[in-house]
Image (cartoon, rainbow, N blue to C red):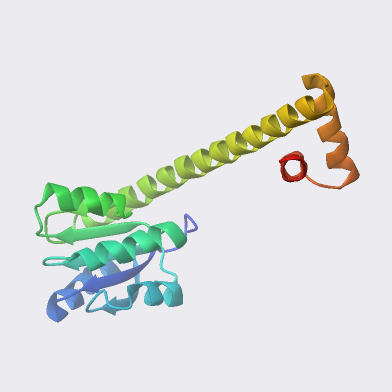
Length: 193
């Protein structure tokens, strides 16, 4: 989401009059409301169709199905999600955060506070996504290193060579087969085990 472009919002609200009022407030605050949904039915499909920058959910009492949809969204197509609700249940709040809700507010949408809330939700979302990417990268590197170490150990045992020679053998195999070092290590493991 570009920093200078208006933020494009998908609004989910189960009360028609309130939804119209909220859309008006959001538009007045400089946001673009792409669409209004009266229920969360088909939420994932609608998000895929409209590609909003942020999903704003204002429901009296959101159910578990909402969290399931948001969890799928968070896993496959993460977006910042702001939820306004009257549901004051610590366990539900924890589940909502786990499902990817960026900001959970037990309040009605206040036009004076909406911009800072959305700005904060987007900043938190970006920060979380950076951490998530760093964690994924660290886990990938650790997994690759583990595969390389396993292949070296197998080569050392099979050919009675030291670690340096096993590593050199893996590097040579990697270059000769035009594979990454972890892929070459996986090939060695498959052959020897």
